[in-house]
Amino acid sequence: MVEAPLYFEAFERKARICMEMGDYAEVQRTVEDASRRSVRNHARKRLLADVALRNGDAETARRAIAVVFEIDVLGEPPSTADRLILVRTHLEAGDTLVADQAM
Image (tube, rainbow, N blue to C red; front, side, top):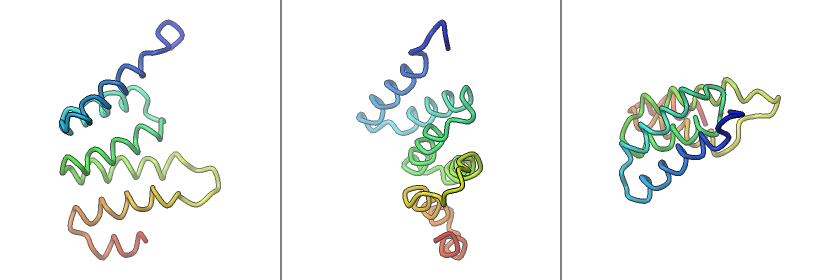
């Protein structure tokens, strides 16, 4: 990171461009690649969950938001946005009972 401080910014810029173009499959591939290189970055995991849902990939979304809940342990309850993403992942997977419990 010291040698290339804007390295992840390139991933994020590409993801934004692809999202504006509606190419959610490419956005998901780009964000997955960046997430693998920065495994504890909860903002990227949130983005991955959101994009995977838009791309119809509920299982990837579910795994990504689970990581957010796992690493975002500051003693505060999960944010409303994170809970909504979690509920959406369960609904997309057809798990209405689990979605109801997640609320």
